[in-house]
Amino acid sequence: MQTRQPLVQSPNGEVELSNEEIARYSRHLIMPEVALDGQKKLKRARVLTIGAGGLGSPLAMYLAAAGIGTIGIVDFDVVDESNLQRQIIHGTSDLGRPKLESARERIEDINPNVEVETFGEPLSSENAMEIFEDYDVIVDGTDNFPTRYLVNDACVLAGKPNVYGSIFRFEGQASVFYAEEGPCYRCLYPEPPPPGLVPSCAEGGVLGILPGAIGTIQATETVKLILGIGEPLISRLLLYDALSMRFREMKLRKDPNCPVCGENPSVTELIDYQEFCGIPQANAQVDEVPEITVRELSEKLSNGGGVSVLDVREPHEYEVANIGARLIPLGELPERLVELDQDETIAIHCKTGGRSARAVKLLQDAGFQNVYNVKGGITAWSEEIDPSVPKY
Amino acid sequence: MPNVKIPTPLIQYTGGKREVEIGGVTAGEAIGKLAQEYPDLRQHLYTGDGKLRSFVNVYKGDEDIRYLEGADTEISEGDELSIIPSIAGGRCR
Image 1 (cartoon, chains in turn cyan, brown):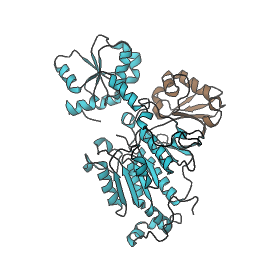
Image 2 (tube, chains in turn orange, brown):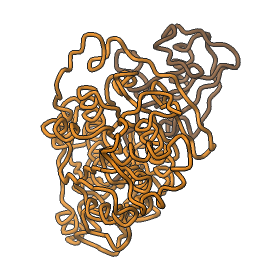
Image 3 (cartoon, helix red, strand yellow):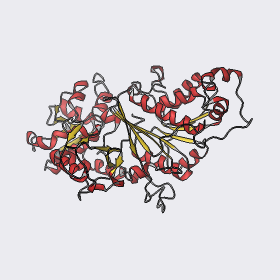
């Protein structure tokens, strides 16, 4: 039944299944592709998931139910209302709790035979190699480019497969990056986009069900790799479009000049991934922009104004929550500058302060003198000034 | 005319269009014309010195044009070009 070398070798008597486990896994055991030997491989397997969020939720739950012996989770976040639309491993009663705690409880409830190992710190160049060392497969469910490149490079250096999934709005991507047998993430995308050019899920939104589709694909690939069955997504990029309900597949190739997995690699140890992704420079740019806190703004407004407030979010966001400011979406700002008065003091806000910082820069470059970025955006306004403004 | 599939993160620059018919006999020409027709796309596709950005991959059918003839890859009626940018989302906060 095997079509390739399984990642986990036959336990040969080292691992046994209890009668309870045999009953639990009966639908696996009667399939020749898994059978008793395969189920023991799964029990012996150690899988590390990076992130207990949208992708990590279905992934960890299905891997637990399937009988993976040890599941490691790296996450340092707490459960927030805005997570519940898609992060199904956490429930309403978990709000405010560390995700690692609620994930562990959910997994242990699904299958108490699973050993859960938790890492409550951000994955970094300092700890990645040590954490990865003890696992057979790494599953990437992160939300940012620095961690994606870090996971990729650490997997290449450690010789482990990286089961990749990524989502945005209605679209998802999945692949298996395994440099021993095919291309790595850097062969596909040698460099990350500059910060701010590609919107994040927090800015762009995501269909709550989408990570369910992609996370279960990642779980499937993980199980196939462990068992050595079927054809893995190595050298293939699977694209899923929920709106048209279409799957497409692109061919991937190993880049002989890849800086990590190529013939003459220049990256032979983990680097500074924040730096690589241009984060410090981008932050410095945002820091250079003059700021106003929501408290200062609120005082100015109640003291008779002298400041006009501009909202640079999208109209559909404005509909969800607004503080009565004038709305010009960031994308329309360049051609609508004429509508603004250069002599006025202008405070610009968005959701959390990223887009508005870019707007301030844009106005400054156009010659405006008194423009301020509202620190923390409408989210901070809701938290510190007016809780009746909904947080989204 | 060949079709170019526009990925979700970029449709805000094509007036919401997910597919655009565009002329051209090479992939480079078609993408160039696309950026001409939708000027806001330009900075997302090209670097300041006019090179395709390295986090934007262009495929003809299911083949990355980097492994065909690059920008000179010939395209014809009925071919489909796809722009596939890197996306980072997953553990969304």
